[in-house]
Image (tube, rainbow, N blue to C red; front, top):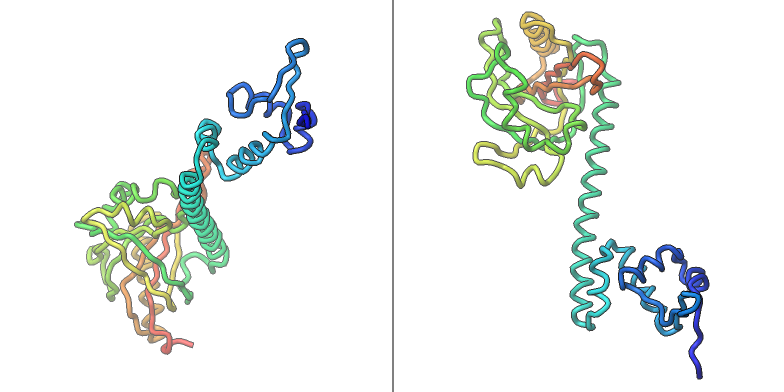
Length: 283
C-alpha cells in the first residue's frame, strides 16, 4: 500500500507548526521532506515521519536549542533517558531561580508597602518585624561621621543582580546605649539583606550570615541632613524606649532606604533605626 504524502501546508495544519518553521527545519537539515517535486519544488512529507515533528515540538517546549535537536534525534533509548534526566535537572534549577525571583519581588513590594505605612518622619513607633537573614562584615573604624556609600563596597558584590529591589539596601549595626554625644557611636557591623542563595555561595572569609530576629521593634525613620539631625533622631529613639520603660534585647539596626531611582531627581534616601524590645513589656 502506497504511503500517503502531505503537502507542507497540510503538515502545518496537522501538527500546528508554521510553514515558515518547516522550511527552516528543512534548510538546517533538522526535518526534511520525504520528496521534493523537481518541477514545482513543492515539498511532500510521509505519514511515517510526522512523529519526528512531535519530538521537535517537545524538545522546543523544554527549551532544547535547535542545534542540539539533530543530535537528540539520533539517541538510543538509554541515551535518550539520560538526556531527559539532564533536562529535568535544568528545569528544576530554572524553577528554583523563578521561585527565588518571585520572593525577591514579593519582599520588594512588602518593603515599599511598609514605607507607605510609616508615621511621620522623626516620630518613634512600634513595628512588628519578620526574621531577616543578612550578610554582615566588621565595620572597622566606621562611625556616623565618616561613613560613605563606599564603606559598603565589600557588600556590593553580593548584591549586583538585585540592587533595585533592596528597599533597605545596606545598613549598620551598633550597640544600644544611652548615648550622650555623637562621638560615642561606633558601628560594629555593615550588613545587607540576603535576597538570593547565590549571595551566600559568594561569601568571603571576612563576611558571614546572621539573623535579625523577628519580634517587636521601636523604630524611627528620618531624612538625615546633618550629623546633629542624625544624633537628634537617635536620641528620640532612646527617649521613646526610656519613656515607655521598654526592655531592649538587641543592638540598633540602622538601614538606608532609597526613596527613588530616577536619574532626573536628586539622590534621596531615608535612615531607619530600629531596636528590638521584649514583647511582654509593651501591649
